[in-house]
Length: 192
Image (cartoon, rainbow, N blue to C red; front, side):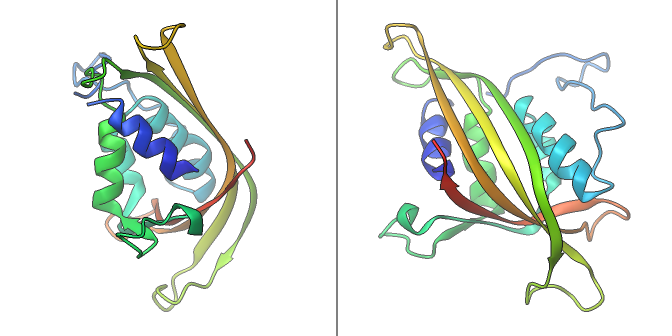
């Protein structure tokens, strides 16, 4: 279900939102309590914050270089049967969604609100895990609302909602001591 939303919303958008902070760098300041120093902070604080603020740079920092998103079997494109996409594809999809320019149908993403509520965290023993490195598998409830300005809709907006569990496999960031990244995200069936 998340793939359908991301693809649809990416098509509904096309330039990065530019809320100003005190530093003038175009991004809201990241609260020091929002960090990637634990898997809990990464999933509960960092990821919802950067996603809701449509911060492509912060989102990219949360993803491992080998990141993959695993699709539900019913979402796999017969022309591309691998059943997953990598970090570059994920950033291309979300990058389009994070933009604020109108598309050819006159639609654009107005806002995103993401809340993640972890339900369980267990050690992950993925075959890809380097010896001696501890990885964590976090199952989290996802509440995602994407509001799209749509002049073709009688109310002028469309709301896309995703309510589902997602599985996040987290590992220590190989490029930054004491930080965590998402190695893999596994889509789950929606509840809505």
